[in-house]
Image (cartoon, rainbow, N blue to C red; front, side, top):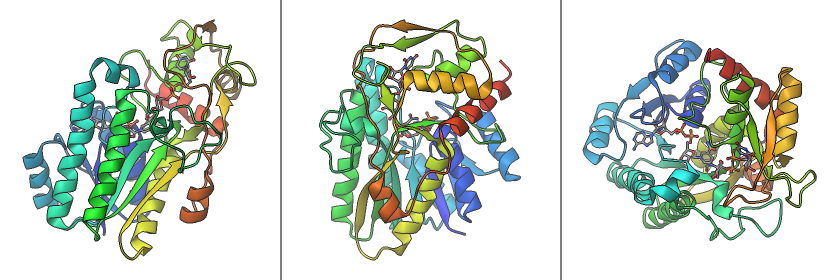
Length: 338
Ligand code: NAD
Ligand code: WQD
């Protein structure tokens, strides 16, 4: 079986990707120190897979620890690098911490991949690199200089680092995946998103409000130039996103010669905040109390993906819609029992 190191594999997107990798016949090896996750995610994976996944609890930016993992694992076919900090607001307050973990961990990995001639890399990037695009839907050729937060800039820098490494190492194949807004959970509700403290993202806040853990959702502004005045995003089911990583690996395996390609991963459709709130309430037959508040600093008005390249080159499209994702997000919230 082809072994794939999955850094951040106990996290939200990484855990779902571990499931999809296993279904496709790969052998995922999780490297995660649980700094933004919990052991329950490994237990949830064990329940879904019927077997405990291989798991190393270490800091993947620690070169000696990572080298020792690679020594233990032997022949490694590829790396999917999810491990990173991801909170936009926190990155404004703690930029050095963000640059150190997000760029440092990638630099360590690339050096070790080079040393061992590990041939495939999938890197988690973000639509945040586009900032507010000048035209929508946004395609991969749009300029990426408006990332607007230290977090966003770590993704811009990491993408460039991967491109530079690919240019220097013809045997290395890499794919940079720009996720739009991942939501939802595995349909079993055994794994999902574990936000720390008060959720900054919309859907975890909605699920916690519906569960009675938060009093009211605050909708961040309704005076944007959109259909109902609230911001537009491209919400993608995490299972579709997870499957795209497997598709990307297969695509790289077919390529001869040096490869470094960037792909948008979204549905291609935009939904407003109020559409998400109303759809959630309808699909799950629950109330979501909300109030309209001021705009959130740094928010872009609207962004959604042009999916032409991922469809035509990778042959990947989404199987799930917003309703599926909001149903699965609610089932996961309820499974937490709080
Ligand atoms: P997450 O926080 O749930 O998962 C990240 C995992 O990495 C966590 O389990 C954390 O414990 C681990 N981790 C972080 N630094 C580590 C380190 N140095 N060593 C070992 N483990 C470490 O986040 P996620 O939502 O699954 O995001 C995964 C990736 O996708 C990140 O790179 C993120 O920037 C990117 N991304 C996320 C979103 C989103 O909205 N969730 C959107 C675009 C891109
Ligand atoms: C969506 C919409 C909010 C919470 C972030 C990162 C981005 C990427 C995805 C990693 C916005 C509104 C939210 C609330 C609200 N992550 N909202 N009330 O901002 O599109 O993207 O996550 O790469 O980099 O910036 O997602 O879920 O925070 O917000 O009205 O309590 O919901 O203002 O319009 P965002 P989000």
